[in-house]
Image (tube, rainbow, N blue to C red; front, side, top):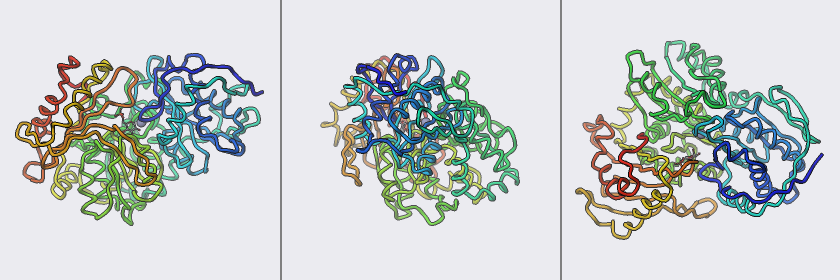
Length: 545
Ligand code: G6P
Ligand code: ZN
């Protein structure tokens, strides 16, 4: 039975870089989740309603995932959807959800995840809408969702028993069909189309060894099925491979702080050939060779330069794209390949139009995301499979691949300094202080480096003509060195200031420096411009990658 529930607007439902993310306790407030879900439906409803349409629902398995899914199912039934496809036990990695939306030509999907944020009852929860291309809703849709959340007065929901999400097969909620699907099968089938599984199986058979850290999060089942079962990597290749609602108390963010065990293993005497990790919802990746951390920006460049090692990309790439704060390493590859390279704002949603229009094949971000036109999300397991394809074909170590890459294209030394959980007003004061210097920075010499341009990045989407302003402050020096400042759009507590620092080095005699040392002069300039310590009291970044 469908009922109308009266409600009133709840403040603060503006989606960030990737959907709405809040503490679990916020989502558990009466009407909170329902208001947002109703706002999604209101914002995306086609003229003739949802009758006959299919929706995909899944999440990363974090705390509150199952309750949220049951509510979404009942609200979708009240909207008249014909069918919802939902991952078994509510599990779909974000790239798998994108894959399922595309494969079954669904109207779109609702993804329950707070990505790499911590989980559990005191952790974070999140929700976002992806459209029929499988990608995150563009800004005009997220703006419309927010607008609706500020005026909502009621929502519809069907009163029905919960669906047994552990049982694969057909169920009903009111007059809507719910099909519980295997979380891995469709995704694995897509990977088998893109990559040469026989060659990868032979590679493992020849003794190649990898450790994949699923970080107690969603990629566990995917990694067990693909790396161990399908490709024959020894059992134990996948570690922390059982998803837990609280990630067993860990923070599923594949960076050098939270994946430190993997890093230490890869730097040790008993390191396997290759190490990788993925995040809470399976879209990010961390790549570490034996004795060699690969920065996400470099990883994107290496994948672009060697993509033809995998069957799906054997014909070459249409073009590539990177987010603005990502280093220019991929630009150098694009130039050598003679293909287009686009610079977009931070956030995967900005790649959607370029991918849909066929202008780019690969894209990636400094925030540990790489992906291609196979889905419309970044994809952690895919990135590992492409790296494996390159290593299997070229039979070189990661160190040798990187050394060769830098010798050919030059090295873009790159680091990101994060100041997390900063007081919001103090963070805004830092950004305003930096902005106030923009008109006078150009032409100045800072520690011997001359500022060429200084601006607040605006993106003009070449496909739909939309403009996105205020996407980060850039200070570019002669020779291409660069400092970028922006506030994170994914945190839930206070503000996170991110400083991205980059320097190009053509001379291969200077390619083996320690990154922080290689960037020391620029780091000092960056701190000088921002005055973080004076304005926030912080002496050191919380995370350096
Ligand atoms: C999410 C998005 C990414 C984006 C990242 C940036 O993971 O999916 O596309 O790069 O957020 O996060 P930030 O915290 O820097 O806004
Ligand atoms: Zn993620």
